[in-house]
Picture 1: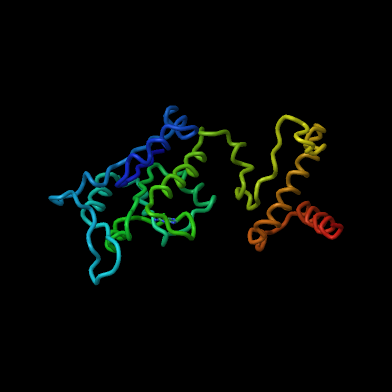
Picture 2 (picture 1 turned 90 degrees about the vertical axis):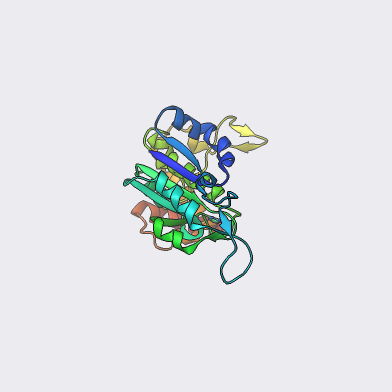
Length: 242
Ligand code: 6GU
């Protein structure tokens, strides 16, 4: 897959591209990551890409010409062009998974007060990473790139993301590694028992427990399996005992 980012701040992506799993995916040839400098497309004599808003008000607005020309130069018929804006659809694991199946994503990063409204007609969708405002779309583009790239076939093993938080609508179960006892805190016995059925049951139960405690909203419309119902009852009884 290829991801192209259109930005006024290409340098912000240097560390991202050259680190950890993203870097490996690029070196393996599974992912191509292109950073496009939006300013290089301006036809303004003074290299400007933004201007004052019609009707007045605070801040500057990105002009149509440099943004739309950069999009046209970067996209093909097969591209999905995504505008980064707090007014967009919120990123979810299920959406990251859908995006990971695309051949080419083009992420358009804004800055300042935002984009000229007419730019919206040249993109396929608008995306946000949550209900808060960033100074620009770059950090959001990195979040989306990261969430998507790790799901592309061959980047990490399938098992590494099958159990991810949200993949099955639950938060992930707790993990432990050496030592068995740290500062008096022990690893749960079941995890060193070698009994795979019990381990699976323990992990599912802890996923349910954590989700109910910190993200009860995720359970609201869940269709619980028979085993999940049993585990939820056990958790409820344990909570009463406390
Ligand atoms: Cl995509 N852009 C900006 N500027 N702020 C955001 C965002 C995007 N997502 C959440 N906040």
